[in-house]
Image (cartoon, rainbow over all chains, first blue to last red; front, side, top):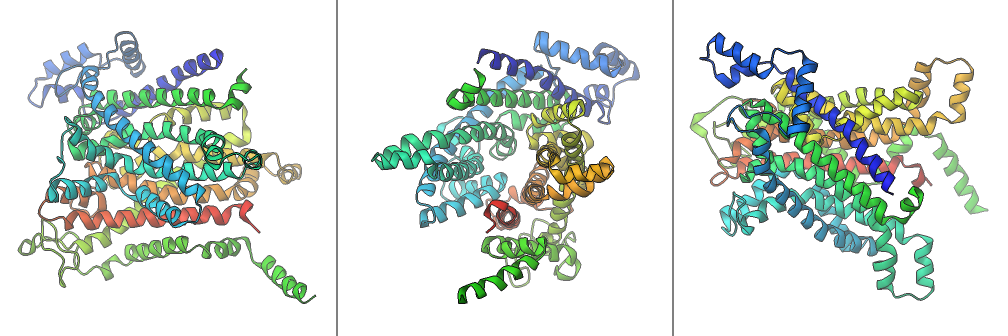
Length: 309
Length: 295
């Protein structure tokens, strides 16, 4: 098991360097001179030349990339924002707690609603509950998060005046953004739980459990659920990563000061170090979450554990 | 005896149907898939004949009729420049479908080729292609699309490229998986034994036989491409005004939501029904193409 974990962690390193390379190349190829952007249109050619020398912008591409990685790994320095002049890392770290809170909240909502709905749908397949749940799940999957967010604002903030339409400082303010962000994940979790539960219910060991006279609640709750939840755990991990990036749209609607809004603003003001840092940061977080899920997966599924031994 | 006579002609009749008709026949049994197909048909019709159907120009401003709520003259009302919302939605269907299909086309061609080569040759080539795909997969799709558009600059073409490229790894994986499962079958060996070139084996024998998961994924992929593109336009990175695009229309109506909610309501409904239709169709196709469900 330890060897497996170590191998996975080591494997993460080339992937992350690859991600950094993609992002760096992408923004390197972007038209526009960074020096002009920082110093403004009125800057003299002299000042621009000096800036380019100081920042190493005249170095060959690979040298620039090497420096970027070196600084990122050794000093945790991924550049300075053009617009605020503060280190990108610092800006991200102030914004990240909001995004994390938003995503975690949405994930919790998705699990609390999605798993029970999926289980009931599977047990009572083809019942009215199942039909309605599946229709709602389909609608939830098809609804753009930014539209749902606007509708929620319209209903709960503008018409009913129950909840604030923006910000993220109080518990009340967190409800609408989290709900909007969670909708798609609720649908995914529900559908996944249902289909995996349906598969498990038909398995031989469930028939065995029933035929030995086990109570139905134990058959479902202990024998079926444990096995059915394995793919759901994977999905939740993947969803969490998508929530982090889906938060980009949600944050810009509800004016949540998270990483997503930071990045959208950075894109609008062509603040490339910030965009670069933001993408890299989310990709790193996404990879780490996926790694943790895979490890968890190995931990809860005895078959995988046995294989690893 | 009687029963047998009844069954036998039916069986032979079924066998005469080609594979395409067989799938369509099974698809037709699912009302939801048919509903999806009907809506998509309607959208395609709107997109092709937008000039004929749309009652007004999608970009012509009419400052005498700003912020009108739905009426017999403007069925879905007008926006902040007095433009007819229904007409903009109809023209918007053109943009959305274009983005959806072309983006998936880009993803399918690039991803499919990489996946097929990767699955067919295996070894170091497979390894290096899939490692690159792993790298791309570790950036969430929406974020990758945003990064690409941010670098290329916002326009319709760049939007399609960004959404398409961000979906490449998904298709590469699926195609590779199905190529791997078919590669070792006997008819491939036979094709190789009679001297078919690698390219011919891939294009003529392997790809046609691994179509089912690709078709399903593409249908669902069009849905997510449209959703992604609308999201990018919503934050101002997609189609630029005054061109009609559903996501951009939503974004434009957003600041007037307190007083004129109809401006955000209809474009959102248009997006939702399009995605819903494609999802229904994709689910229906998955069931229709699944050999396990074949009787």
